[in-house]
Length: 308
Image (cartoon, rainbow, N blue to C red; front, side):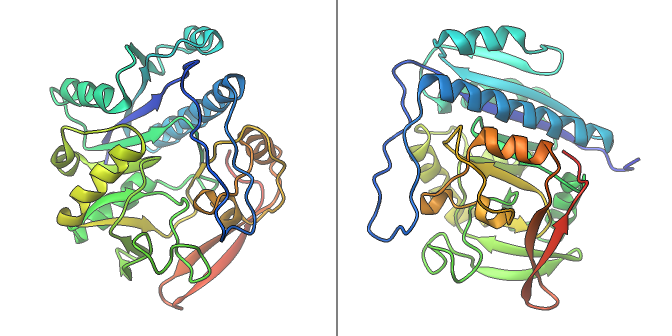
């Protein structure tokens, strides 16, 4: 059992409305592969279901390591009938659901922040409901984050493995979203960035407070938080085999067992939530790639019989 227990607040933002669509993503001139499209209401609800179920697994894993986890679904005015029926079926002992009027996700998060500050957690995790969580080695990533944070308090935000550009071949590697520094802290290889995505982020409570009140919705909120981060410190991706796969597609067949290829949202290519979920449930072998700071190079391990 982990001797160091942390209180973690996880809040998932969701919005399944008839009048809210996935924003169009026209294919840019540089994209060799491009398959992202707008989702239907039915697809959007199914994506939310798969995503929330995977985050419940995240909660269970952390509790198995001794941490105290509370999980809230912040609903921004859902009116799609299938989604409302799904909300009724969720175990309220596992997930607290806040069905709020449609005012934008930042408003709901601001209200949630005011509530939990009465009993603040050690850490928070914000995640949108189109992310699939995968921790194949059942790593206590929250303890790892705390160890890194203790040694570098200028790290304000933590991201689990996602679509941030980390290799020279990645689009955006030399731009604002690219890495600033590769380091070794607390025996972990880490990659530091000056930008953060809004699909998920993890922060210590004292750092989280520095961003409030939030402003904007989705992309504009992300821009607002990045403007704050520029003056506060860094976003860190610890090099460990823990992933959040962000996708706007329900269906698109798996074409690679290399997990780095599942992180191409920024380049306009994604696999389907249903396809990724079934692929991992069947325990198909996958390859995971991380940066080894000692060798100053990337290394690949093959994962079989993993935890999912």
